[in-house]
Length: 251
Length: 357
Image 1 (cartoon, rainbow over the protein chains, first blue to last red):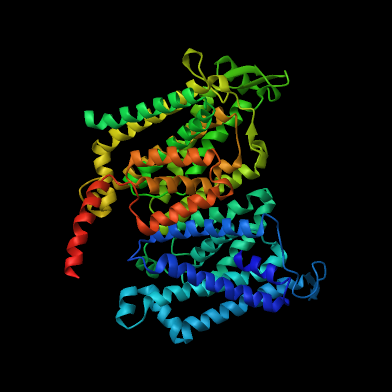
Image 2 (tube, rainbow over the protein chains, first blue to last red):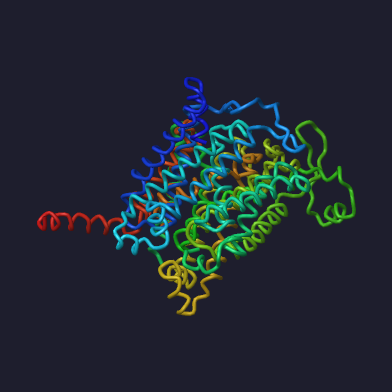
């Protein structure tokens, strides 16, 4: 939401690619500041404490956005073409923006996979998630890793907001439902597995879209959350996650 | 025994004092907000029991509030004359229905508020058992997200369901008749009696909870909160105690929803919103988590200020800030029961530390 809104505001003054880049950078910095100010100095915070703090923060960000941007709904222009133009792809007409979304999404997933598996920094981050104390013993600065993970997820969130908002529009309160949906997908795919998260995201999206065949559109949001609850009740390790890995985490 | 009821008496005194103060200063209109505060306080103390004593968080209690409010609102406004059938005539014969006229002089045949309230509470209990069973097996952020999810589902349901009024909610809900001709209603002529009624109910709830805390159940819950595995090893059925507390707090929320809906004469989807749930948690947090009196007093102050509009457009932000500050600096809550001894310890420790450095 923050990314989308910032990009919309900036795009009035600078060209679109630059605006998106700046929005991503700004949101990343905001993510880092939030982590440093609110989370970093806490001594061994319980998970619950962090959850409540982040919920409080999301309210604050939302209210701040409301006071900056007001209640109006905004959107970025389509990256190429317009909202009515479409591309013929083997007999199927789809909007060009959808191709942008799919393409950039695939790029981000590939980049994340490479980051976590190939670079030193990515491996350090995974080590911290698996066992913080052991990672620290190996000389990894766990605090920096948490800040970095906040920044990476803020940047990806901002980028996602920018590329999707020509289609879905953005307003001050469009963040919270997305956060819930993101959490659902992450659980569904098994936490800490970005490739499986894409598969889970597709399953969730398709289920949600097809649910309007049988249920009123207004219930669409409730569907994804109901799926979240069912997954949590039945298989908290996620459909692609291994039960063994899940046992190491705390549910 | 006397010590336990001393605060109750003091609180009752405070309630009377507030009423007298508004009477003598001619500001009786404040009592309307204070009465609404009382019903919100009922939710808060119930939630305090769950968070502070059973150690389980719920970010979905506005959902139970809304279930109570919407069920009673729907049943007491749905005109059954338009849906004649065997069931309706059976209900009418058994005296569960009541005929009244609406604001335009048309005649209505609706469910009497008492059975409507019963249905609302019963539904809340059933849903709380169904949801609570699996949800309370979760811990940490999974528990928080699952209860938050439950709250959002309820919100989306009431927002998307046409016979529940969609975004408009349900209005024209009649008053709730009690014995001896009293009526729970927002009518200004019944303001004082409703004020006492609402706070009397809160005090009743407090006495119930206080007794529960000092009983076998309360000690068991304290053990569960302290160390769940150890409590289980001592033979305490931890899952059952957690579930029952969850249901109890849901009943408090649903009852508050029912009565506030009759008091306000209507309910809207915002009552089910996530912000309401967060607000209840924030109040419990600032009140000291495991401190019923703290939660109650904070609920009195904050809800009143919020309802009077003192926070303006920053209403939600205020509760967000409260939540963050409390969790950052005093994760055990601000008004702890042992706050005095904590302060003493802090004061006596500081010189020693200075000497050491």
